[in-house]
Length: 291
Image (cartoon, rainbow, N blue to C red; front, side):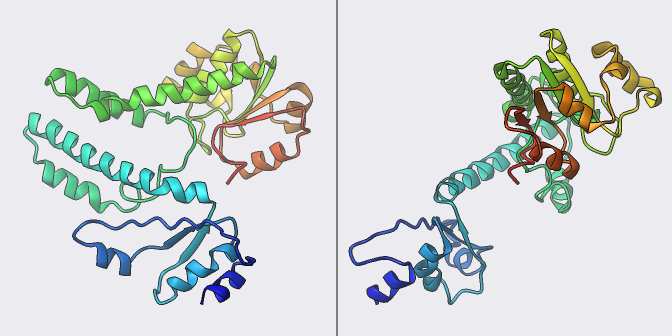
């Protein structure tokens, strides 16, 4: 009864707690969606407060997840926005393929068979801007084809602009910190490689140098003497004295810098940043310290 439910939630008579329970049901398949849901979501301040709701769903063989109420409140909006994005993505691919006399159904059939990268959690973690040589090249190629064939592909053509906004926002955060000595943890476009081509972190280092800041960089994978070809040219055109900025010693960073920019998801970097004193702030571009 009501009294039993209140006791489960730790409530006194007359007290009320709000528990959010968003649904993810589609018109026409709501019953099946309900019975085979990947999880039941409760937005509550504690598992104890969500307990009465968990009992309501006890008959389902479905994971019951408790998250902070704001997370539950926005999740459906985010989910439906993603579904709408997928619809527009597929339709823009179809318009592009149509102009090139390519079967868009065959393309998307193959695209959706890749459950490792294309239809998965890959690349869906909040973080910093994309870089490297592959993603920028192919996204730019789509924009070139759109202009050549007079196509309107605003979603795909807007990707580079969205990426630039991410880089600009990071630069603004660094400038707003008002520190003169900045240390970067990571420089290549992704951890474990020395590929600096298109790296947004290189762009941020270039920004800081242009503002007259003192810059140090720690990236164990980057060795200037080993850089060759287009990789070497790319960084030389932007940071001509890279070797002077690099250091292998984290303790040297702590002594010489008063602002730290965390650009790689490296557990060693997380440990280092968490050990820094409060007067040495960290700008976590990859959400490593909160995950």
